[in-house]
Amino acid sequence: MDWKKYTSAFVITSIIFFTAITLSSYFNDKRIDEIKSIENTIAVDILSLETEFELFQELSCDRVAEKPVLSSELGSLGQRLNYTERSLGTNNTEVMRLKQSYSLLEIKDFLLMKQIAEKCDNIDPIFIFYFYSNSGDCKDCTKEGHVLTALKQKYPTVRIYSFDYHLALSVLKTFISINNIENNLPALLIDDTVYYGFHSVEDIEEILPELEELQKIDEERGEEV
Amino acid sequence: MTEIIAYTMYTLLFISLYFEVFLLITFFEWQSYNKKRASYTTQKQLEPSTTIIVPCFNVENTVVKTIHSLLALNYPKEKLSLIIVDDGSTDNTWETVQQFATHSQISLFQKENGGKHTALNFALNHTTSELVGCLDADSFVDTNALREIVRYFDDPQTMAVTPAIKVHKPRTLVQYIQKAEYSLSVFIRRVFSHINTIFITPGPFSIFRRQLFETVGIYKAAHNTEDLEIALRIQDYDYKIENAHTAMVYTTTPETFRKLFRQRLRWSYGFIKNIYDYRHLFFSRKNINLGFLILPFAALSIFSALYFVSVAIASLLGNIISKIIEVQIIGGSAFIGSFDLFYINTHALIFIVSAIVVITLSFILIGKKISQEQQLWSYDILVYLFLYGFLTPLWLVKAVYNVAFSQKTKW
Image 1 (cartoon, rainbow over the protein chains, first blue to last red):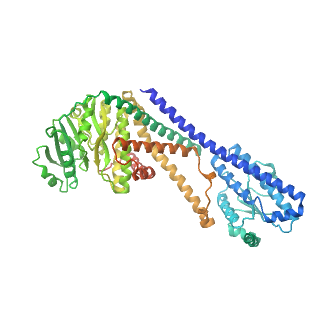
Image 2: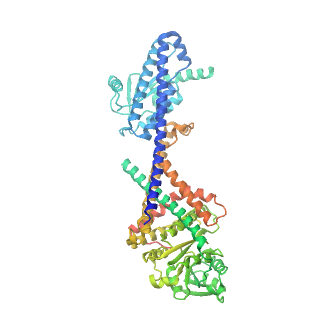
Image 3: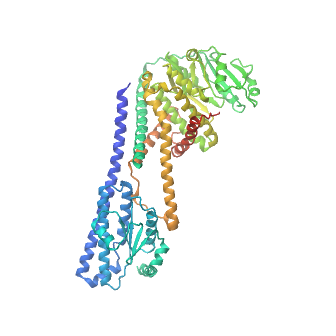
């Protein structure tokens, strides 16, 4: 038996396998780095807006109205995070940390926009909080995700915040507790009311008739630009 | 469950890749050996007496061309005989071959239908030549094919030599797929020959020493795959089977999927049944390469093919269903999206499968090169790489089913 040939074939095959796994790991690391970079950018943007608003309160109202920031960046970050979670698995530690950071950024964004809305008459954001699960206990969550993606495309300035219901994050647990959101997913929190189960785009438009008004404002802004 | 599927997938991929790497190393080893051999091999031309048997069953449209290609062989006329055996044809095959009735090199026989192996055995009883071969009546030989083959009989251990089989004038998509497949077989048979692990002596123009049949016995029915069974028997007797990759034979292949399915079902069923009959060759120390690698891998490949395609189809169906749900919810915008490098699939599986495809591609190209194909890069490679993997499991499933439920196959 030509042991040398059998062994050489094994070694070469192992090298090819190892290279494939290393390449895959390299690209996954690049993805995570990109997400981290985006999160850092968003964190700085939020901090910058917070600081600016505290320093120049009235002027900032106009600046925020002229250039609504973060909504689309957060959405894009959310999609990338979603894809990475599907690729690397829900148990990946790095992905979990990024999800926690992302959820914190979402809450931070919400608090800042709420503060701005209270002080600025020309800004009246619409908030939708979406609670889902990736643990296999929510059969309609994928469908609801598509609905909210479509809603976001139709109304770009609507602020949709997605949260993994089971995420180990104390501030999220507190938020869920305060709003009495049960483990009956998918769940939507709109104007302090929780809606359980699947809701289509039309259902949400019925719940929020002000969306139509928001669309007109967005179109007018689009024409001015 | 997902983990079990993943581990099984990676294990099978590792084995598949290992097999391909092994074949590639063996090929380079043969190349090096062949160069050295060419420098010291004598140029003495061997011309043993040879009989070619042409078993016929309803081949009135092709048999004449087959016989003419044999008569045109570049070989001494007095050393070459043809035996045409009409195995109870129901068309005009017998009438068609009468035009050769008075030819000095040709003997015509007609018998009751009993299957190809009975026609071959009948002819074996009517020849005394040193070498005996067979050519299916829908195949044609290159003029130098026999000369290229007999060279390998200079080794007294060699009992059989197989040719390089190519597809004759492909026209349909199914035939082009087979064209690449046959080029791949040219490579595989060349490599197998170097380590004496050929386990199929194809019907078209495999040549044997006639004395072999006195030692190992005549052809058997062998589940309608007598070419496979005789090769396994030769291996069982520890004889040598060589491959003449420059001996070109052209065969007419099935032009429709239905006909291809029928043929491959017979081959797959015959393969499973014959390797079961010869299961003692598995892990036999008599021929370690055959027993420990080639035959086990060939057997495993049935399961692997079914497994890979099942997983691929399940994944594809899952994606289609997800897309349908998405379209139902958000309409046509589900198909609109901008290209983003972030979302390109870079799973390790993609790279491993790519490596396997690239190596398979190299096998096909090498097969074409060594069999002196004019055009290496052609359309058949593309259709083979993209489509063949989805066709194979269809007849494998049926073959496994037939074996499991004892249902025989037909020609």
